[in-house]
Image 1 (cartoon, rainbow over the protein chains, first blue to last red):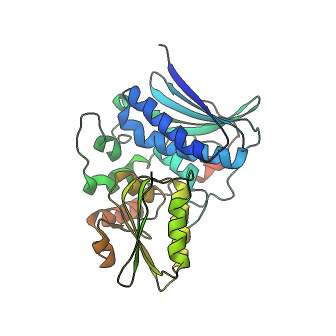
Image 2 (tube, one colour):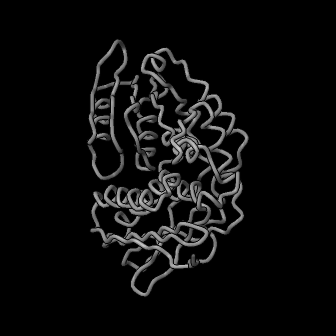
Image 3 (cartoon, rainbow over the protein chains, first blue to last red):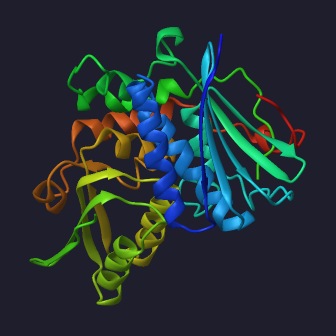
Length: 174
Length: 141
């Protein structure tokens, strides 16, 4: 099956975070995946923020619609992998290390791969039709394409379940 | 675009923000900083009209939370599900219980959703596995 792919190159500027996020949102809606808008926006925002802050090179955002998943990748042109200074997710009042925590929480899987001239940080989302009940967390339902209204009182419980069980390995980070 | 409104009120300051908050502009963080610099120690951030936040905003909220000190408070008014989700992912439901109106924040009357967030956090394991950062550098899709 032919994969659909859209990409956008952005400069190493903070404004690229917003531009990339909006581009990704539009692509996802165009592909009929409105239910994944929150996850895509959060993931793209975090990955582009990391890239423009740490790599300080141009950034290439690439979205691919595959048979069983939506893959989102942010490439930069600096080969060094920047590990986070801390990964203290257990400390709620830490002031860093949250970006990838959010990526991990909203995605099925994520990781980093080296490129000949840089690196790519990616995350993958289950397509709504194939999502297991656990992965189908509340915001997706609340923003469903069927026009259903959100149910704020249900939100917190659903969100916790969505990220509770991740069997896929998550690897190193930038 | 962001609409920022600072409303000095009776014993506390309300900073109302709107739109998508991220690192792409500093207006929203400047508004928070300005309120704190002016000596506000009881601060309500009204995020009712905010439709997006990411970890850069969470970081600013945590820093502001520290700056108000033990005798002050920083309370968030929000209803958008994405904000609730980010707060929850970051384990900050206790630090930032959900208020759905400025008046509720003033009276310190969190909504039921905040209580649900707290329960969810208590029941949940660490949100990101520590081995996520100790594996090999490269992986493929």
